[in-house]
Image (cartoon, rainbow over all chains, first blue to last red; front, top):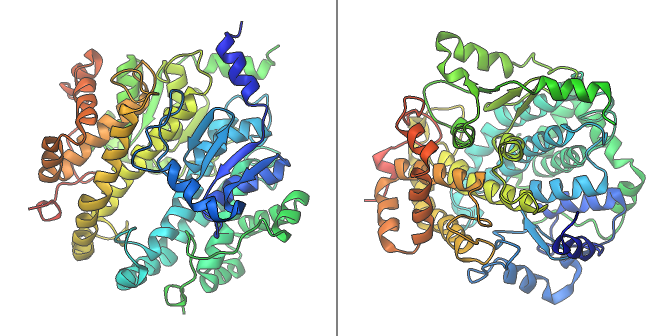
Length: 262
Length: 262
């Protein structure tokens, strides 16, 4: 039997999701938006709350924030508030939402969550965190211009070794038997597919020449097919055409022509 | 009612856990070992399988491995095999084991898993992945000696800005109301505490002077108290004194005196 506290918590979650993220760039918040948009979920987004957006985010990640009785303090956005729950870390928010939004595949497959989570973590590692480090290999808190030489070396290695490694990995996932469709795992779209879509979109923006060459090579045919299939999902298509989809800027994925291949 | 397939899968999991990891260094596999050891779980470890260990790992991560009908191919070790299940990604393996081994706190707290997972992800980001990048800021596949100048710059920024940021974050977590004990979340030890222990142990090894200074400062008093409390857990204490606990070497956490502070 549910305790009174559990009941209260459950009813407190019968409210829209609240995404707390920096305004003005897609960033890591975009992974959360795509899951919510695909599922047609009701949510608010601080990125569109006008002048107060930055202050709201800063309040959550302040050095004096100790969280509350239910929630440890969060480290960084994206942050999800849902009723009394406040959590952070992109793959963790997706884990929470994925189960609620029906984006982890077949409900009878009790291990699906661990497959979808591992694919998500690997996509974020190699196709989101590493691309960020390409323009900030030395110090996250310093300007790109102050680490440009190192950024060129890092990006050169990324394009030569790391990007093919990760695209090749996901190509193998799609060719494998556990992918029973055009999607990464099982026969339904999961949030890992949405994450891979956004990662490919991001590296296309950051390294257009390199990714165009890789697209033409045919070596990652199934990855690019998945990318296009996500674009054509009705809810995603409408979202991408809307003003809610933000333009790339000074976030994770940055286009510096000198970091792309010749 | 459980389908025949679900029943078969469940019974196939009534077997010991199998950890597949490189021999000769604690690495990311250590987080998995600590969870298994704390819980007193039965497991095998390829790191102790002699000459075949490296070949076993290479087989799993081969470019020709497409996984099987149940499991996508894995990208990198640590890998956990449990019956027919094969998964990778350190925080994902911990998510799987944590629930089974009773290391996510109070069972009545349905959101505990998302708190423990977010703390784990943040510890691994800032206190495991970033320390790795300190000695390999440009190219994971190249020698340290070929990126030593950049490693010095990255380590200097890490010690000055990033390490205090993450230790400070976990100090706030421990001071917050959601930590109802000496542990990060709730009133019981969770696997996030074991991860933080290993992360602190690793940065102590990599940057002994910097971490000794931070330990003496008193600014992270609760973090170091947690570190010592984990060391005193009976199962952990016995494990750390055993030959199963491996010595640091050429893994994530490396001690290069020139990267530490003066």
